[in-house]
Length: 76
Image (cartoon, rainbow, N blue to C red; front, side, top):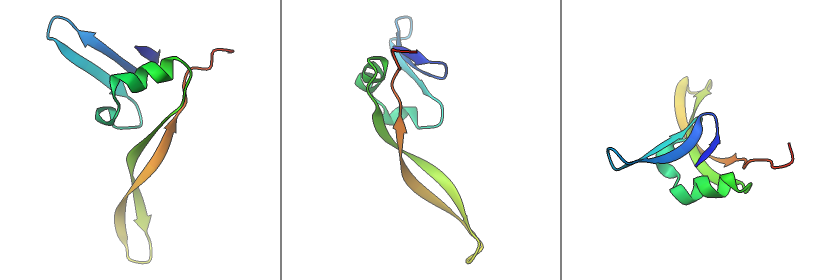
């Protein structure tokens, strides 16, 4: 299922592997059904890790934030 550039999933019959790519989020957290739903125009919620600089403590913190992937807009 090819949703858009840098967001796709397909089955490689030579190696018998499911190849998943997702720019901006962890592709391992998405299932094949998630790609199908995105291709049908539905939105998917997933999580990704974001680095945040805490100036008070002078530390870099890793935060897990919820991210929405927009499905294909059929009317464009």
